[in-house]
Image (cartoon, rainbow, N blue to C red):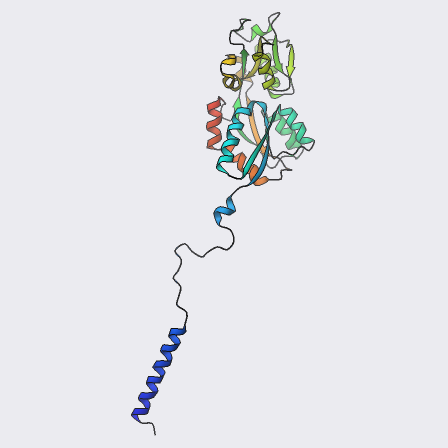
Length: 273
C-alpha cells in the first residue's frame, strides 16, 4: 500500500537525483563578443608580406623608386626590393629574353606595349607619372645656351639619348616641333648617361627630363623648352607574367600608384598621369 510517507520519500529521492545530474552537466559557455575563434594563423599573420621583389625601372626613376623601395621595406618587415635601372628599351629586351623580373616600370608606353603584345605582362599596365624634357647645361653655362635652337649652333657639343630610348624618342619629337635638327656628339642608352656627360664637362648641353635636372641639384642648370609640351612621356608599371612573387609585386605596384607614390613623384617634379 502506497502510504503518504512512501510518496514523500519517493519525491525526495527524485529531487536529489535531479540535483546530482544538474551538477554533473557542463556549464554553458558565454558567447564570444568577437565571434567564433579562427583556427590557424591570425588574420594579421596571413596578410603579412615576405620575400623579394625584383623591379626593373627606367633610369629616370632611380631616385624616386629607391625612396619608395626603402619605405616599402620599412612598412613590410621581411621583404626586400631589388632594383635594376637602365634605359626602358634595354630593360624590355632583358625581360623578353627571360630576365627574372617581377615588376617593370617604363618611361614610355611603347616599350611596355612590346612586352604586353608578347604576352609577357600580367593584365593591363597602370600609368603613374608623366615627364618632359629640359636642357641641362653646366652651372656656368659656358656655351651660353638659352634656347633649343642654340643646341644646333656650330661647335656646340650636345648629347642626346638614343632614339630607341624614351628620352631619345621624345627629343626627336621636340626637334620636329621646333623645326630644328640636332647633330649630337654622342647618343646614350639612358638619360642618366646623358646627364653624366654634362656634369663631367664632356658636353655643353644634354636633353634630359626635368626631374633629372631637379635631382642633380647644383651640378647642372636647367633651361626649359616650350616645345617639350609636345612630347610628354607617360610612365606605366605592370607585373611581369613570369613573376615568382606576384603578391609582393602587386603590393609594390599599389604603393607606386597610391598616395605614397603620387606624393613622391610630385615632390620629384613628375607630372600626374
